[in-house]
Length: 232
Image 1 (cartoon, one colour):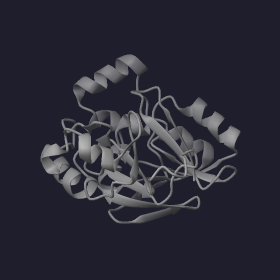
Image 2 (tube, rainbow, N blue to C red):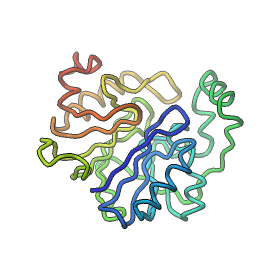
Image 3 (cartoon, rainbow, N blue to C red):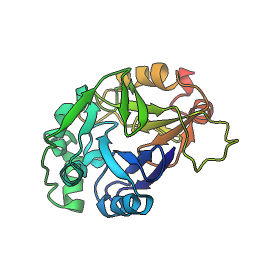
């Protein structure tokens, strides 16, 4: 599987481009603010053709480039049904303090809702661009946060990595941390259930690609993440 990730300008959110191989259709996961030029370079260099945008959740820093991508490539945007409402005006869902900070740093946060939106639910498999992405609903950071699993690994990994699958985790799980629950729609009790039942229910040999920061594995987080220690 071809996979490349790079941080967005806005809050260093990780954007991932995933395809069966180079010179093929691809999906773009979590296109945050300021990724357009880098994404264009990746698509051109690796001869990739976007087939869809897939979102792990609806926070602005993960979706800021959705409108221009939808218009440029005429592709749909996939999001969990419980976060679909966030696509109407994502800046209003941030909370006053964070919204003012982003407006001061990045400007007016102008937004045009995408017109071609497809919602998904827990347990569904999204068959897109020759890939199968399995959805695990993991609310807590937002109501519709989801983990997306592909039963394949990036071809950049060595064959003896000991890993078996790739999990696009959004802001549910980070290396050494978890997503915050104090924004609109977040809930700590719900997050604890998602961490216990969804995250820790995944096999240790799962590569985790978070929405921010470096890659990790379920096994590593189970053993070392302080936010999971009381759940294991």
